[in-house]
Length: 181
Image (cartoon, rainbow, N blue to C red):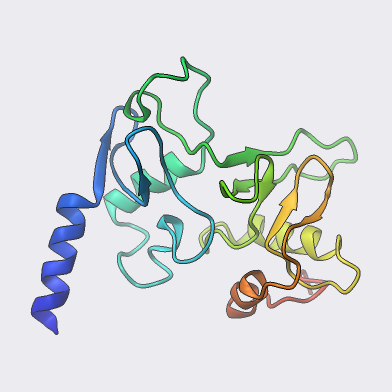
């Protein structure tokens, strides 16, 4: 088992990374020659420490994290990903007027633009708790959902799926309406 683990790890480090201009070597999740991105669902690049593949201090993970938690700069659409850096599925909410902090995070191609997945990582504990509380408060029963629309300010898509609830339940917060207690 130890030899297999070592071989898989070597293979991932050799063939599962991409060199970017902005952040150096980052982990690859979905690479098709036109876009390099992460998916918010677990397992994902941002969940690497959570699943035990590498510690949060791993240089490739740190570079990946910086890369994936930023929207790509606006450039010529035909320019290769390596020249731009950033996750095309990273979305930020416009500044809020009531003093509430804006939400930001990773979404997914299949849920569409501007929809955050509230199950993206463990390192941003305060931000995730704030997001989980806001998302839970948009549903009638306080349950976690797959994505949250930054435009519509409500929970969106597949409320019956258990992924968001299962991920939230695995955290110390759990899927409750008041997460700050």
